[in-house]
Length: 489
Image (cartoon, rainbow, N blue to C red; front, side):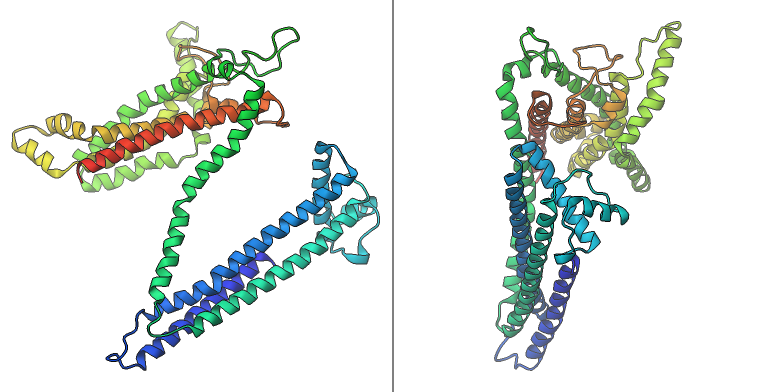
């Protein structure tokens, strides 16, 4: 029986427990003199309490047993492989082959005495059945995989049995506890409260997990490369330096990548901010409700377009257009490259317009109506009210919205890959190609990876740097937005 069926059966037991528990609570309520004893909770809460007792502990036990079983089996495989292979890299490959052998045995339905004695015989059987299996393999992998499959079946059976028994026991226990004065509502609300608390910690745990996943490899990278060389270096050339050239010093300079990231983000903001702000002012102050309900969703559709589509538009349409236009203006000499900061910035700006307009519109509409009415009552026109009253009042919130938009621009990847190129250099000409941190992260983690060289580990240092930069901007933006909201509460 698969895990999906186990979960479905547990939920079915919980649904049955809900129905019978609610029905029993309803019968007790209707057969009791209300003047003598008043029920504490509605029958619905008794039903939900029975559902929680029947499902939550059982599913938690099922998850724990499955995790422990996987860990034990994986440890057994590693221990057995280590007795035959000493090299860690070869052992890792052999562990993968054992897993493939285990899957092949399961697909072929082989177990016990039916398991072939040699790897070659199993490969022939798998090939005839249309199952791919590695050409090279050791004979010890076959009995090891068969033993792992047998143990996995036992563990699976034990876990499923415990799960179903616990579900039935929880349903019976909750059913037997039903009383008129049972505080079922309080217990259900306590479970809901803890569930909400667990959900609210997901963002924090995700942030901590991201930091920890990159921090170790970043420390490893800085053990090989001087941090000063990385943060203040002006040359990006992650190849190994030639003999006698001083090693890899100066080859991992962050400055060209950081400059390209900020430059392209600046160009995109210069395009997106005016258009987005004017759109927000129009929708918040001039547009009728009918126009606003139509224009705003249409504008926000731009945010739903995949960034790869924007990148294709840039490399196929906008980049060649700028190149041909510059050639026509300069008499055949194209001073704007097809892949350039300008092309990437404009396309990214189009993508950011709905972000700027939506956030700014929310901030502008949050300005109290009394401030508008007071300005108009003193004789100011609508445009003067917007320029001298509404926008200054909404400025902190708008600044926070722009910082959030800037962090979105700094983290963009696909548009830059296609529209700005991969040239890592310090350049102030917006008509030429540059690259960003995200592009180089993709480049360093593409292809055959060996996480023991600076050429690969530098991607973690770049990722942690970019994460710190965007996190700081987001925190500061949220601080400004929160301060603005408190001003009018």
